[in-house]
Image 1 (spheres, rainbow, N blue to C red):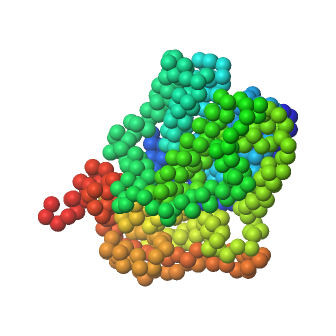
Image 2: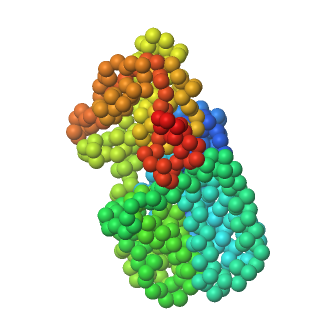
Length: 518
């Protein structure tokens, strides 16, 4: 037990140190922007990531450490619940190995160190798993209510938490010793409590044309032509195997599909861990036959999976001792061999990768330099106080907001991109007639931008490099900086077709008003 707690503590300290040593990725900067515009909900996700970042930055200041603190702490909470469930059901030794595996997985380290909703979803899922498992095993009303609260907090973190419901329901339905509890009051009271926690998001969406649910349906492939395709399946399986490490992924597939004697693990425990992991994985596996599934989407499936794999294959497994732990040892070693260099890469380019293969470099290098460049350009404008800063991508607009001196408000001109949170913060009347300084990636966009201003200056190229000890000076960002004068309007996204599921009634009405003769 002491070894497990020590491992969790050491992992926390390492992540706290690393979290302050590299620049915010574009998505992190975007969520930090959310925290400056507190609301009951947001276009892409529920509000928990914004609320917790706001709390952390109010206490610790506006820097990377504070932005990432909620997810670093969140994944520590997830680790604790993984240990508690494995320890209570099997043994402290099994709990230790489950935590050992958990700390070595790339996916979970990314969720901790990159401030996204996943880093808050996963502790909620882990806690809900623990309390539901305890409730099923001990028929405890208190655990059912605690499960409901964590379920609600998970819904406030990311909508993937909804998959917890069918996972638990089918687990109870398929397991004879759990089935009778469906007829009791407490699981349903826990569900009501969870839905009550989710009320803020429902209120926000009701006031905003159910924009978030439209976005989620669009991400899930609603409205796309054609239903079945094989183009994404290989990518889905390959990415999942890399994020878990290939051997751990193989052990997990064996744990889901294999037949195990009752002396290794109790049937009810096996059923619970399988349903609470495989259900979510299968949902995204099936979805991958229709749309591209991002690597982090199935992440909640692997909370119970870590316990399942440890209970079946680790030296601390349930029941009889294994004949060999070679497969487990190989899986854990490979997981750490993959993860440790990637964590080091966040701080220093230790891997000899070209930039096009180094996502860490592309997303965390040069934003502070870019902020200084755009700030100098802003100060050179005729009236800096009446000039706004923009990016054509919301990610770049957010990076500028964080890394420009004084952290000014910035705008995303996403007329030609997709709807995002900036549509709720700025509209044309707020900026009409003002000058602007902005950045974008595609050279030809200058012609489109010219239609939004009275005039623009010729765009200026911006190049940002990094120095690799292996490959020397490498180009990371090639951007264009433009100065515009007399903004005429055209900030918000305009759907190309009226049947675009993302278009709320307000957006459709606004698009109609721009059509001549209407």
